[in-house]
Image (cartoon, rainbow, N blue to C red; front, side, top):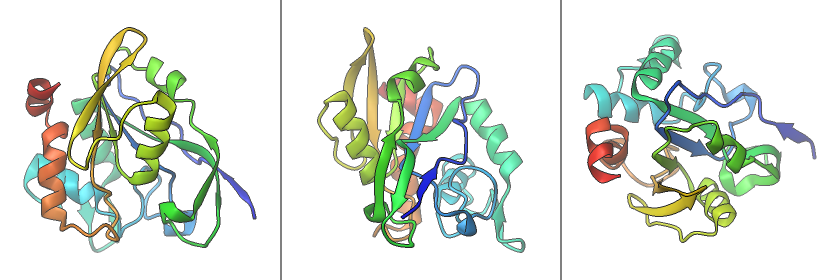
Length: 194
């Protein structure tokens, strides 16, 4: 089986205060754009549309079956939301995008990644594998979906939020996922809770 290397560099806006970590991108043939959460069937950018604009199609180009990448990047820069994944090299044990079919060969150097964000306040994991890898690395308890735990990173207290997967395979309606993500994505809510 082939080892796949992560095709993207971390997306880190200046002054990033929140880091969202998935597991690993889907296979390239599933991409609708050249960015994170590129599968048109994934609901991450619909969740963002609901949270920030009360419109799940705000970032969706249904006609072209893609997402409005430049608008997404503009929002992420404005909100200080960084994106990456918890694995940099994987083997797909099956030909799927499912976390359960990913064998992690090389986990992300999380210490190095977090050090690149001196203003960081919190981390969001967007699936079980990402949560497993992050909590194992930092030796912290896993929060329940929608909840958080604190952890120390080089003398600074940060918060890990466990969010529901944006995959449609995760058994929760997109509106409900957006309600949970809203707790951490909106700056005012984040400042009040962190």
